[in-house]
Image 1: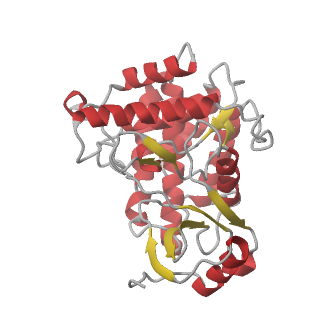
Image 2: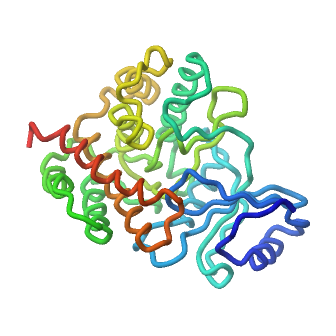
Length: 342
């Protein structure tokens, strides 16, 4: 077996458990930590008979309802035969005696993942097609009949934004490592400016961005939507707004594209991107400054949680401390969008 990275779990216990669940696996030939994420540690394991992806909760104390790998598994399993591309789920383990935390395994796919929204290394025509494929997959997700897939209990229909504001306010209070005035201002502003029409319900991914998509090895199309930890039932414009906030963030702000020559790169304007989504889903209107500010507020709180885990020493990514500092940047960006109307 190739030299493996240091693994913070009992590999022998994992293999024994998986062989009981999946059958004989053969010798472990390779183990690779998959980076890029800031939440649930992820590994690729190559056994003699198959390659699998392991996702598990981070070690140590975690916030209530956070790192819900069981929910990730459930929604992807439900979507297996839908128009939404997801990897095939293989096994969920909720018995914490195996590794000390919940985990699941899924099939390993071969493809490309781009954490930089500028998509370096591809042609402008390919970028245009890749952004269009990202748009198409989001529309497909929001058109899925979630009740028919057995996901009626996956979340609460209606009143999504108010519930989410309440949730992320609690998360902020539980995880903040510093005072950020803009977050406090958003906590007051957002509930007072809730948009009408919050009765629409779809599956929402919760972290819909290029870095959570896997593209075909050579073709400009999405073959898998990954990282479903924040998925629930909710309002589709929350997903669309989060997907679009990268047009407002600079490359230094978690790989945004603000300030880049989008036409030269082959990347659509945010207006054209939203129009394509509305055409595909039949919506008559798109996102507003509220939706963007809400998404940035939520992202800022997520980054603050990363900063807290970095201080505790159980963050999934080596650069979690630096990334956690982005909570300030996204809070300021969000407040800047709505401050004139405050």
